[in-house]
Image (cartoon, rainbow, N blue to C red; front, side, top):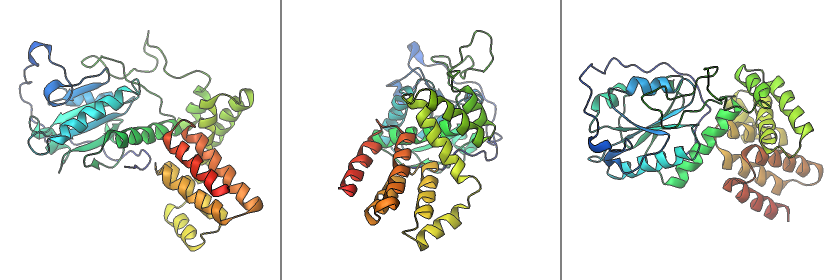
Length: 320
């Protein structure tokens, strides 16, 4: 379950939604999670026609993960929606899990052109930010997906967060709002601002200052590594790069470039595997160059990430 970097395709067409009286509130204060109200969190909302527009507006500052489920069509899709709620809550507002019961809200599914359930769709700035993610997935895969999305958010300087337990009021914190706390550590603000403006070189320089000042700042180290990935891939033609790597499997520059592209696309394990296999086929300075590149990618993902732990074990096997 991997995704391409966040993009900004066209806005969602809401014309299929017709104004109707809002559905009654859940009786007895029932939770507003997925079907049956079995699970809620500080960062989830059950979507209906009355609040759909507000949910989309919440994505103007932080991503909303829409989850379409149907107890009548695919009963296990309800369990998956619960898992998405659980994982979203682990990110303390970086994502809002918005569950859509298509049995109760068929017009929302029609407006979003949903052809199957379960299906996830990441919304940012009121628009789909990734391709639809169809099919059921175990919670470990959902966690891996959210981790990839979080990496892409960091790489692109997207730092907004949703307010906890605030749906019905403005869900996403608005920068500059009086009394609102900033979720961005001021130390990282110059680098993240540079990323948001597309000034990758400046972002690299700002992160480098932080790392030089404190090499133990793991967030700065990860930010620098991802900014360098963006720097190395600026203006690269994806198809041409992959064709070059396929034609020259032992070309270090070609292989490391495609590994960088894999990272940006969320294909983290593919990036690691590509470089580990290259390490097996190289020696001396060439091997050292590939190893250093791989270690930088490990740093970008985070040393506690299970994929990095697995990658380090594979690297040790390749070296020894």
